[in-house]
Length: 357
Image (tube, rainbow, N blue to C red; front, top):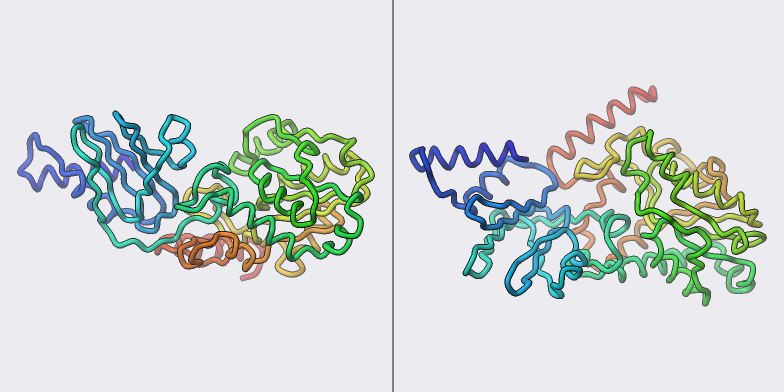
């Protein structure tokens, strides 16, 4: 990114006749944004002490700012601002830039038209429950994810008829709220102590040689809460199945009567080129089984049953215009030109590797 900023600065210098010059932040923003395709949320500290913010026209990743009285602060999540004493936040609109300078009110300018495509995976996996996904509380989204799962639960009648037979619990932490409202739908409580996490490290965003090491050390089940029960594990997402396979192994060691897995996200079938570590078709478990996906995952884990969130249930949970969401990893439709190109290259390599072409 620094390379593009340097080019933009050089171009401004040339326009102003060379030598020392005072760059115009909004012109600089325009030059930078005209060269980029994809996801970016930038905070730039200028040489004169001013702070500039830039967000890509699709608003793929979050960016907010707040007024602390005698200072301004920016972050990717509203909860980060609250932790430093800023209760209210402002969204940096897609395609816009914001300039903070001493003694002046924040200057905001729309550089390119907004074409919203907010990454849905931020709310599914990354964000704090106490943050906002744009102007919608993440807590509300995750609660609806749990309710939508419960509405389509094939075991619903059995859970209602025999509640004492079941134990419902989440993993990882980002599934806590969904599990709470999934259980509440049936008049039960989520048993968060059934499988606890002793570290904040996340599995799939790390390199392959680290993922197994992390998963074998960060989760700790409580056997007495699981043994003999019909266990229902609420997961936030399933990318490669590595994390879930480890979790299932730990749970079976606690000797449940059954183990059912429910996932708040829909099947991930396409790579992400916008800042999430899943960049090839071949690494995605959903592409391993083009037919009978859920049944094959049941066998591979193994689990008594396995179900994904339906795409409509997912969209219902966000409470916003579906056209404003990026679900490229779920449907293969990318919001940017070079995202489409890279996806095509990945798809071709995968098809060659698997003998499909």
